[in-house]
Length: 249
Image 1 (cartoon, rainbow, N blue to C red):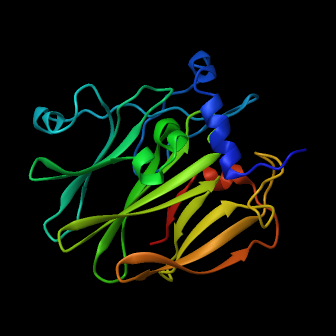
Image 2: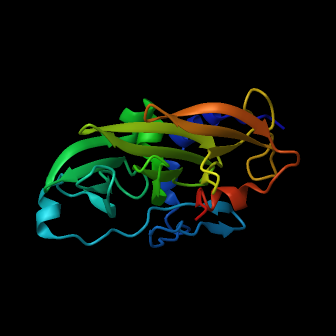
C-alpha cells in the first residue's frame, strides 16, 4: 500500500475535476452554520459537497461580484468597529473557487481566494466551506477561523484565520490531511493533522492514523508554532475531520 501525502491528496483533487461532474447523484447538499456541516458517509466513502447558499440583502449582494454563491455572512468584531466576513464561491458545486472577503461600511476592503492564500491551484478550486467560528485571542482581541474541505472525499482540510491590526487584516493559513483547529480552555491553540510518518505520509486515507499536534501562540499578532507532539495511539480521522474546529468555552 502506497503512502499518501498532502501533495498527493491535492494531485488527486486536480485529477478529479472532470470525474466529480458525474458524482452529483451521490452528493448530499447540507446547510452550513457555525457548527460543522455533516459529511455524507456511505459505502463509497466520505462525500463532501458545498452547503446551501445564504440569502442576503440587495445592498450586500451589490458589494460582491455577480453570480457568486454566498456560503456564509458573519458579523465579527476583529476590529474595534466590527466588520462582516463573507465566504462565497465563484465557481460551481464541483469546482467552488472559494473566496474570503471582508466588508466594512458596505464596501469590500479585502477579498482573497484560496488559490491566492495557499498558492496552489487545487486548494483554490476544489475546497468548500465546512465550518467557521469567531474566538477570543486572549489579548482582548478577536480572530475568525474558517475550515474548508475538498469537494469529493473530504480528506484535505485547510484553515484560514483572520485577524486585524491598525486597520489592516492579516491571514494565517494551514493545510492539513483530515485536520482540526482546536482552542482549549488553556488558550494554547492546537492544529491536528494525520501524520503516520515523519514525512507526513499516511498509509490509508480513512484508516486510523497517528496525529501530529502543533501548539501555537500569538506573537506580535501572528500565530507562531511553539512545539509539537505525536499522539500515542492512532485515531479515527472521521471523528477529527467531521468537526474541524473545536473551541472549548
